[in-house]
Length: 161
Ligand code: FES
Image 1: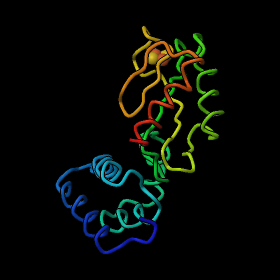
Image 2: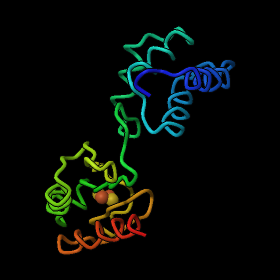
Image 3: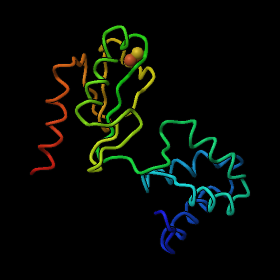
């Protein structure tokens, strides 16, 4: 979406139109754009700004504040490792480090093949099953370092089918 194509401009304009009667439409617009395209690059923020009159700086501030929004394309599988207190004390830092090692990406990055994005999360409300890992919404309970490789392989195997 780097160079905005006519089709993308049309779709984003439609999303903005959807919320034209809302008093504070920014979060709804950004959520829809994120869901539709998977990321919200600067060109898109500028377009939303010109359509809504919301300053780009304000849009950028929101996009970079919430981890749900992304400036770059996310991988097909988004791995979220909870680093909240309950998970942390049960070793989630080691778990995220292992994902990082095996995928050769830091938290916030996407693997070169575009398959995996690694995210560090705050408490996801699953403290009873700490350390918790979620992949595209599927939650893995009590994940230990030794399981990380097989979890990754589970997704790699899906791709090989
Ligand atoms: S601290 Fe990880 S789910 Fe609550």
